[in-house]
Length: 442
Image (cartoon, rainbow, N blue to C red; front, side):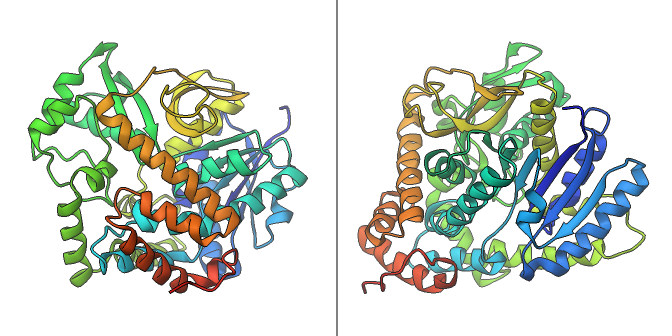
């Protein structure tokens, strides 16, 4: 590409956008962006304008010639784009709060991307992302779609299965967060650490860990048994693992595995939090309010450190490194969500997985791992079944398919509870689920 790069960010008014801007500025010499379009909806207009002003100040301070455009017209922005990044939340944080509060009434984990909350975030999001895919096909057919919108694995699964786009990659900051956590725990520079990642989004394992090319898996596992060593995310409790369980598992779980391996403790924490400080969404709403007050400061021209409390640390490194490597055909290794194509033996070839890939201008080439250990395999396959059925429910709006997805999720303990939660959440989110036209069967 001889011309400058045009990047479109859908959900441009997100509090994460300053980190993305910082990442683009840092890489400008390799990634010569000339146009950055930040797109949002009417409800996000004020935030978009605040973020846009901050982005322009950051770019001016850096002295790089990137033109920032703000718009509520997605189609206007997409024309002739080279890369499209998606980071939106259908129903905003109010919807997430419902996803978290309703399930715990029935003794079930309420969480943004896992269990019933993950199902409903997918049901709301997938129809929107598929409409965006149609616009990309028409207006910028050669663009790469880089999706950061959660649940990223399910969204990538749906795009691969129900759209015509070929240039699509799903992205998450969990693997890079795990790598940074390991480097910190081992007191070494992150560049010296390599992790063999394989699994699904928010269900990824580190199969092996290398320091300067030598496996240190056993040492990392021993470090994980120390209750004072919290290798987790800002938005997930750092409850200590049972040491003998981690030793027996023999691979590195991600922070989200606590919802599956420590379900009762995590549920108890959620219930207590909901009754005291509020659910995570309610806490984030307060954080967002504080962040946007900071962002409004006309003197601010950097990404403020308070953003790291949001739980999205390393987002810019993941997103910008991926775009940079595609554009420059770098052939480096990054963990992304892409079509399996035989990388993990026990997952269908046409399904989305999260696995280390060689990143080229043709996109990610997954690195075959053979298979994940039998102890972890069943859970990964169950979640993949859930994602497949949930994607179908999102596209068809079929009540029974949605109930099936809810019931087969390992965090939902009975078909009766599944139906009760499904019915209440369908009613609560009716505004954002137009595909579910049949009345709820109570």
